[in-house]
Image (cartoon, rainbow, N blue to C red; front, side, top):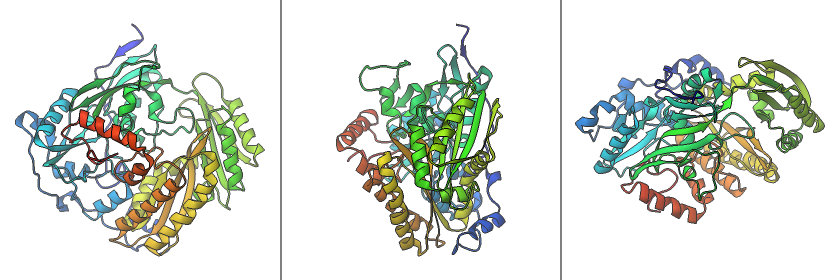
Length: 542
């Protein structure tokens, strides 16, 4: 078929990746900028924590060796081991800065094809070696850190060498893609065909398709197709018990979905190697505007009306007064709603006007807007300011961590009727936990990342001065308080960051016990040796 293409090569996009912190090491904040940021947090440390060199790290000795037939796929190099020890949560960054690499894997594997994954799993199962699936290491929930301490060795399996778009079905608008494809690499291979996956998480440049699937990641778009689940047509997964491949269909009512078993399984049931993904035509028409509100509750009501209107904006970010000020978007106690719409086929000016009118009906004041055609279109200044701050935030978090400033983010979702009480409870209860842990007042901000007809997905940021050497303990106490507050108000423990190990206590309370029994049974059937990412989601024995 002329509109179905098999591809034999990938897009080679070089990825410079920090071993200790977020993203591109060239984008890390210099010492002087770290100090400038910390000056805005009363009580923060006066000097930046030095970044250790790889040569100075004391890594635990390697306990296992791969057989000769697999040696070409495996590395014990200190840089590889250090870079695959942790994800990118605050507690991960702080431990790396202090040179604490006690959890380093013994070996790092770089499979190039599915057969390599099968062979590596066979060896690991026979040798009692735990296997931690690894995409690009952007987990912020302890998803790639081995904590079990019960296996003979630990292998981090890095799928980034399997990053090709293998096949494109233009007629059905879908593609078969290897799980190790980084966001930019994936989109570069789709762009010549006029297609896009249209999934852009904040970690886009430093995360992979397999990671998105395994964690049920949320993308940048605020409504309609918000999670990677919505874009998944079929999965191919390697388990120690065999290879699972689902049938690509537009929809099916044939029993429980096999894909749903592995979406969000975080590598504890199998390793995703390929997926058929639903694509979209690349957008041509774009428009954006921002609306300012004097009262945050009125802004929340406006967003609810928009979410229930059926207009489905691509962007619908509500920033509370603290978040708007921190991002440099607005001050004076005002909240800001950033709206955006796009289409591959039709002008969107009218839809944007309807959205702005809904916001105005709830007391909002539009402050600008723009429309444009083409991929390079930009929105109004507020939207651009927010986008720049959004992409810079992880580097700022790392800079604050070097100054021993506690910076925690947690995201959730709840129904609209529960949100006002949840918002107040977070400020009250998490604020009290910060005072107890640090002796200081916290800056607590909130924004909506995604909105649904029945509720929002609030994303909270907590910033407070910490004590050097005690940052992890303080973070843990604040995290525990946040998880407790979410549970008390029947909000999810995570909307799009996944469970990992850091969210396990909250997930254990949220998950129905019969479902936990089913997950453990699936683990026993698919991974009888218990080697795959032990400790995420559940403990196999109960």
